Image 1 (tube, rainbow, N blue to C red):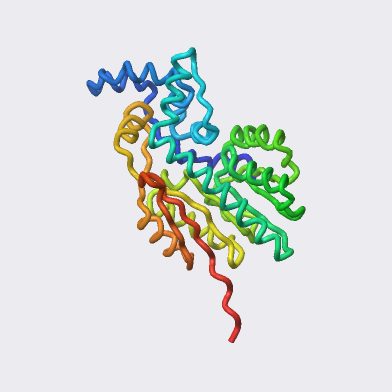
Image 2: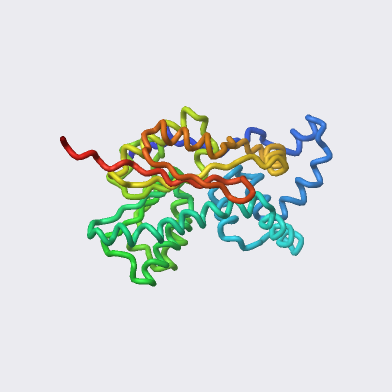
Length: 292
């Protein structure tokens, strides 16, 4: 993709912050009582990333990694507390869901003797794919023909992805590509597995439906999409909206399943976590019907 074209489509769907100064906005809106909390949250690496960059890939990976860090002892202690909150612990299940499904499905596909291609879009830091690939390689369940592809608009995310993949010893299995999730030509079809976590929360139903149809069209018959949706946790949603201007779209299980079926997926299996905050769906593209 040429630089001019890429610049034209470079949309950070999760960057919903509009104010140059959140403290000034809080004062203007007479929400001064949130200012002390705003200041304290910035000592936590998770809180500061949420405030400065909305729901960024660094924010997501910090939760997936689950290691508290921050400025001074208070920042690290606060970070540990934030990582234990229900919204964060449910959020981390997205990464575990994808990793588990890849580790389970790749050996089954490999048994057929054909090549395997797995795409994460947008990939951010693809910790789920990389750790699954490393675990499969250690167990001897990863065929040489397996390829993992990460697609993301953000060059910094791709650089961070390389920094994760190389120490795990799976860089030879990965291809990282800069591009827009809505440009079908960037998908190296046919694909066996596509993972998409975190993008749908920043798309309306029409836009998400478009993305799902693109994915469906690039999957091989029998291929699957692993996708998640986030339910509404009112306290977390309020704080993220007011202190980080992070405005995400919540969806329940039934809403996500309906959108997947409308996009052409014939077999959709969806579950929710015990708190009802995350939905995990495995949507399969039906095998081509045999000719009469």
